[in-house]
Structures are given as structure tokens and as C-alpha cells.
Image (cartoon, rainbow, N blue to C red; front, side):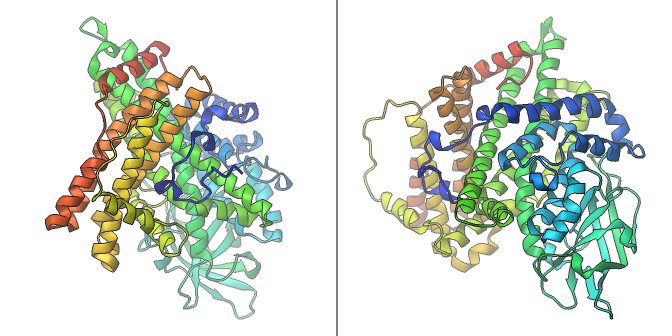
Length: 593
């Protein structure tokens, strides 16, 4: 591992990352690209021509599609070869989630099976459990689901009331309780079930087979979107689970849930990328075909703005997603080199970048909501028709801001995790924050600008980081222990941190493309600068809102002066840059970046 690589999650807040230390999707090797193409071909031949049948939940159709995906190896990409998988790295599994992301309800079923359904056993199961279950999950012979949420336990997952009690013989746990919103529930063979044993404070996880008995379920839920995804309420009535099917240790269930959700968050982000790419393709093609006032509507500036902004937001979050995916792979390699067990290393590497996973979940899901909303607008009246492709995309997108922890919870987690790591001494946030506060009293440095590519933009990003440190440091100092209750301020800070991460990621990708001589370099530069200048305004607004919430008097005025200094930038013609992006999209008649 290069010493330049940021091996600590959240370290981007206080440390500059060189472009040589990040991975960009253009660097995937031929094997990874072939895996991606296999997934795209599968969608074209098996899924996209059956969407109405899938949404109608035609009996047996979704399980049969899962079977076919299993035959192609799509369910076992990240599963070790010894259990029947391909043993590919984390970023390759991200690429699969991306490729399948345009598959609507099928993408949800597949991701639930390969992620939250399979990974708890792979990462926390003992040798016997892994040998029994993982090979059948890798091929799709058995389908998996994940039973965590309850009617009164959503974001507060550890408050679940489902119980587990050891029988008199000491051979089985009898599970009783109700789970809801269980994806794949209607056809799953294996359930990862979370319950509390006796009066335990924390959850314990169990591997439950459908054939154990004592399992009933309500009919399929009627949902706003992802209608083809099986979603059931499941009831456990003295479901007898062998003691050997306890997953990991007693009361370790909540930790399992949290760590698996970290993976689910970043994988969800990857899936939205594939979905957004497909929506943009439809929008560009429709804009080129739809004629009004004797011109294709793609000739009009308002439409071109939308297309360019859709592409820019997608390009930006894609940059961040694969950057984080490679960070996770690098951390895993370092842990393995240090002698850690493979399963523990997988978990630890993702846990290390839990902050980035939360950011990617939030920004990717909100990117997709923006893209589908503008897609409907470009289609106009036809966008509102169920006979056109935007209607399903619009409805299906909305769940992503709720899945894997709501975006509000994830924003709060970003700040909470950063502050906790600082308190543990894992990240030095207070030192840089104090340095930034001291900088407010110093004369600004008006030295000569560097001529190096992206030097000015990178300086802006460095200043945006200072803005975040200024506000976070002041909030901690002023509010201290009560800060945890000030959710609006915490979400303001999270917005600053998130926009910094995405902005830095897209700039690093553009810089790397420039240095590698890519023919996309000029367009990448335009998109990076468009995103940067939008982020400046959003960070400024979030910063002012936070400061107004707790600052006062001269101290407030001084911090506002600092915020203005750290969000200052030279003028840039964003309109012309968007026009260049839009022209490329329109000429290629698809998303081409």
C-alpha cells in the first residue's frame, strides 16, 4: 500500500489525497469489465423485457431469474472460491451492483440476497455454518432474506421485541415475534433473524431455515415502487432453531446488523449509479426524438441544462463510490498482510470506511431522485404515463432514501462517527480545527496561484474543509455534550462533510484522467468544476444556517467572515461548461462518461 493512500476512514476531512492514490472506474481491468457486461446482458435478455410481469409478481418469476443469475455466477462474485464463488475484491462487487442497478425490482431482490442475506453468514458464521449455507447461496439454490425491522423498531433496530428462549432440552431456541418490510420474504429459504434472548439488552442473530416450521407471513405488501420485489411481514411462532444456528456470539446481533448495513449502504450507492445511467440514456434519446417548435427539444437550453446537471451529479458520486471501494480493498489487503483472518478483515475494512459508506448512500440516493425527477420533466406529459419508462424509475427511486437507514439517520451517523473517532484519538480533528480558528485572526495568504492543473480547485477544496472544521469545532466548543441533541446543526455539518468528499473525489478523478491522457479529460474537468461551484453554494448555505443556530455577537460575526473567506472562488462560466457536457451527451445519444 502506498504511504500516500488514506488508510483511515474520515481522514479526507483533514488530509489532502493525491490523485495517484485514488482508483477511478476507468481503471477496471478486462476481467471486471467482462463481469459487468455479463450483468448488463442478463438485464437486457432476462429482466428488462419482463418488467410488467415482474411488477405483477408473476408466480415463480423472480426466483427463476435469481436461479438464472446464479448459473451465471452473478450471486457469487465476492464469495470465496472455496464456497463456490469467484472470490473477487470489493470494488468488483461494487461494479456488479452498479451494472445490475438498472434492473428495478430485480436489482433489489439480488442485492438483498447477495448482501444482507448472505454476508452475515459469510463474515460471522463458523466453519460448519459457512460450509452448509454459503455454497447454496452462491448458486442461488437457496434464496436469502434479512429479518431485522419490526413495527416498533425501525431506525432504532436494537429496540426489537422478537424473543428467543432456549427450550427445556437445551437443543433449540424458540423464536417468537414479528418482522416487517422483509425483502425476498415470499420466496426465501434462509432468514437471518435478529431476536433477544431472555432479558438481554442486545440482539442475537440466528440462521433460520424456512423448513424449521413456525413461520407464517402476510400477503405481499402494496408498495409505492419496487412492486416486483417480494416484501412480506413475517411471524415467528415458536420457531424452533437449533442452538448451532446461532450466528456469532450471544448479543452480537446488533454489531452484525450495523456492520452489514455499512456494506449495504455503499452497495446501494453503486446500484443507484446503474439506475441513473439508464434513466439518463432514456432522457437523452427522448430529447433527441421529441420535436417542438420544429426543433428537437435537445436544442433548448433548459433541457440541455437538465441533461448536463444529471450527468454531472452521476459522474461525481460515481467517482466517490469507487474511490471508497478501493480504500476498502486497500485496507483489507493491509489487514491480511498483518495476519488478520479473512472474514474479520473484510468486516474491519468496511467498518474503517463506514463514514464514507454513509456519505455515498445519502448522496447517491439523492442524486438518483434528482435524475429521475428531471427525467420525468424532460418527457413532459409522457413522463407521467405508465407506458413510458420514467414512471417506474420515478417510483422505484424513492425507497433508496429510506433503505439501509434513512438519509437523516445516515447524516447524523457521519458526524457522530467522526467525533467519536476524534475522541478515541483515531483522528486528529481538534488540532486542525483549532488551527483554522487561529487562521481567522491572521492576514489571509494572497500568494501567487500555482499553474499546476487543478491547483486552484484543490485550494478551494482545502478551504471548504476548513469551513467544515471551523463550524464543527465551534459547535463542539459551544454546545459540548448537548450537540448530540442538535440534529439540525449536525445535519448542516454532515452536508458540508459530504459535499467536500464528493467534490474532492470528482476533482481527483478528473485530474487522474488528465494525467493519463484520457479522451474524457476535458469533459471530466468541466463536470468537476460544475460540481465544485454548486458545492460551494451549498456548503456556504449549510454553514450559515449552522452558525446562525448557535453563534452570537462578535464571535458569530468573526465566524461568518471566516466562512465567506473559505467559500470564496474565482468566477467560472458554469453555463458554457454545461453546454459542452450536454452537447457530448446529445451527440452520443447516451450517457458517455
